[in-house]
Structures are given as structure tokens and as C-alpha cells.
Image 1 (tube, rainbow, N blue to C red):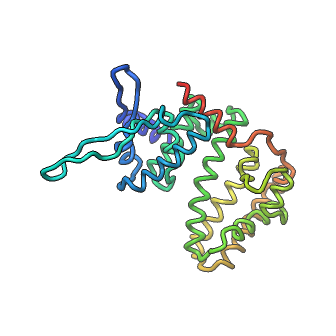
Image 2: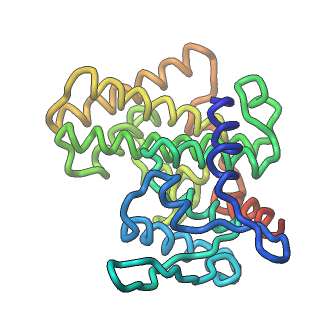
Image 3: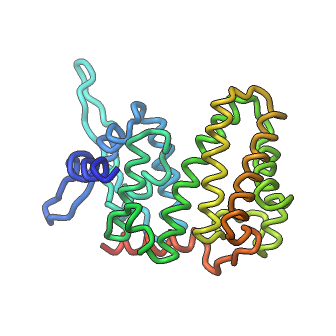
Length: 275
């Protein structure tokens, strides 16, 4: 993984960097689109629009990071102007965070920016040296990405009610608690994600639940919602039993952090935006 990240940094992302007359760095959206594995501008533009919203929510000036520019291209005997953006490093970060992590280049990009944000490379040996906030942010990115794979697998297995499917997993891991029960216990509102209010240990337990459910659904070729939900519940229970056997703290007994993942991400993004 470290070699892939190095290649991403040196041969992919940094390779398409430009500098203007003031020696300020920038990236062109059309070039970044191809690097991230997108072939259609319309699809990539949706990602840019999401990134711009995130930029605005973070109290940054959108036009400072997403400058509208146009390119003149030849179209037969005539020429036309096509839409493009001049992007800051911060804008690239936001785009990568809002792109599809099932694309390998996007997944590598998310890891690359997580590494760059903390100015260090994350390996298994170094993970223990991270602060709790850094562990939470790193694990939450993995949970977010793996959940997308799980929901794809669940859809192929016949799941239509994703809330129900999700709660079966939580009930197995949390001794009968649903997502709503967990949110109530943590004292967070319904529109907040409970995963954003978990410490690194609790996130790691959920990451294991997610990856193992995904693997078993695929391995057993589950093809209906009833069996998919029961599989998720059994995996949740198995993870809980493993924690108990190892003498660990049950997930519902772990403390709820005061700071949400979104707050941590906002702080990290602001650090990048000032560079």
C-alpha cells in the first residue's frame, strides 16, 4: 500500500500539478477527472458540485478554490469553449473525498490525502502512535468506503430495505440495540450519523462487522433480504462474542467522543486550506 501511495503522489497527483505566474500550485479539473477514473464530465461535475457545497459549509470562499475557467477546443471546422475549473489542493482534497471510492484511484487518493493531512504515512506499526482523533479519522474513512461495498453486495443479495439490513447488524453487535437506540444512548440527533460519534475502538469493531458481512454474503451467494439480514445479525453477534472472549469492552459501554468526525474533518480541511 505504501508503494501505491508513493506512486500516487509522485506519478499521478503531483504529476498533473501546474504552477501559475506567481508560482502558486493548481490542478485542472479535466485532468483530475481522468486521473480519478471518470470518463464523462457530467458525472465528474456532480462530484465537483458536492465538493463545492462542502467547501461552502466549511466557511471557505468557493471561488478561491474552484475558479471557473474555460478551454477552447477544436470541434470540426469550428471551435467551442468547454467548462473547466482551476483547483486548489484543498479543492482536490474535497473532490477526492466526494468521489466514488470503488474506483481504485479514488480510494488511493483518499488515503493519500489522509496521509498528507497528518504529514505522515500510516502503516500498521505506526497506527498505534497516532492520536485518538487521527485514529478515528483514519478508521472512519475505511468504514465509509467499506460500507459502500457492503451496500452494493446487499443490493445484489436482494436487500431493498437498507435501514432494516443495517439494524440487523447493529442489533447483533450491540446486544439488541438499533441505530436509533444507539443514537439515543449517545445523545445525538436523528440527522447525525452514529458512526461519526464513535471512538477508534468502536469504529474498528464496526469495520470488522462490515467487512466480514460483505465477505460472507458473497461467499454464500445470499440472494434474498431475509437471509442477508440474518447473516448481518449473526456476524454482529460473532464480533461481539469475540470482543467478550478477548476481555474487551462491549461497544455500548465505550465512551462517546465529545467531538464528531465531521468536526475533526473540518479542522483538518481548514489546515489544508491555509497552506
